[in-house]
Image (cartoon, rainbow, N blue to C red; front, side):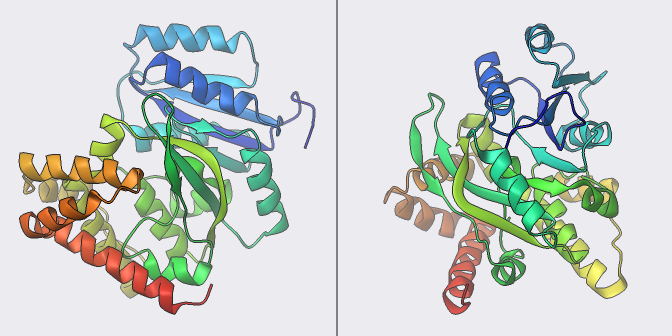
Length: 317
């Protein structure tokens, strides 16, 4: 698809950056500005205003492409609030997510936009991903379910779409009230609330994003506190089912998280497990067995994965 880049953008891509290497940030930005779909704006929210290297880099990038808009927070406010800020200042009715350490394939936005246009009942679409390491070496492909029936059944046990692959309707964002301060699980909460609001979620089976697995992404994705947050999100879902609304409270969440103490041994095993899973390595089996006996939270995660497999195997897609 081609169009005049001076037109009102059809898609607003929103990204927040914090302390990512400038080299990774440059690759992420270029992968969006070099898309086959050019009628876009890219909004980058700087969540570490003291990071002069990133600030200077983005100021220079802006001079080369007017589609790049840079917003600078006065202080660090976190990913959910930064994304809300970027989306609220976007011009398009279609929002795409992107992370500062990932790489979108050139046809990503075009394929997702055309799918949403052809399927007006869909509120959010993601895609499969190619996992890469710090150096950009491929670690394998991860796929996500496309069947709405399966997604509805497995969301109690896992996130159903990879956050930086999302493209969604701004009207749905407004309807559910945007992201909430659930650090590390704000995407899971967002997806759950879309489904609870009657929205439809799907994924393209083609990998459209290279997802970088590194120390920070692994620990954030597997941090044991995240299990507490996920329990809280499920409790909020049950409240919405029962009464039509939930009692989300940052104070209640902080109190819940203060009760969680991470074990260094378990945290180390989780990191090794995540790396093995990304490579589809058989070494993940001994890590899983060790974690099964060492951690109640991880034991629950393993059982959840077994439930997911059972649901998928018994549901025709």
